[in-house]
Length: 92
Image (cartoon, rainbow, N blue to C red; front, side, top):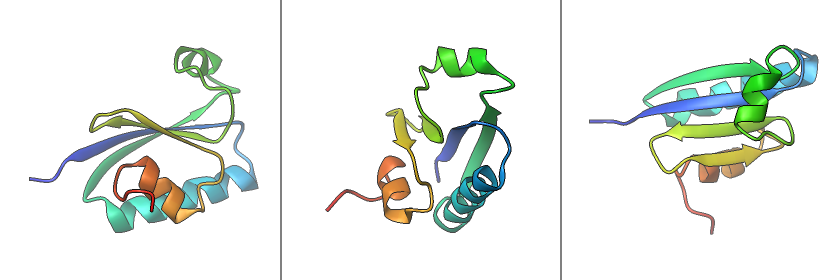
């Protein structure tokens, strides 16, 4: 049985740069994960969520499930960085 990944991506506004981050992340998820839920949170519209998750920079990707909780901050087009953050590969 495959594990379902629950991901939350914090962004600042819906800009062309944000669109690129989302597209990169979706491409990685489609290729590497069998099952996942991705929630996009715009901190300009929902600052209380960012405060609750202690978001200091965007983009920030939080892998909520499966545990352990992990964070990837910054450029999401770096596939290796995202895969390490999702615990799909080890840094090496």
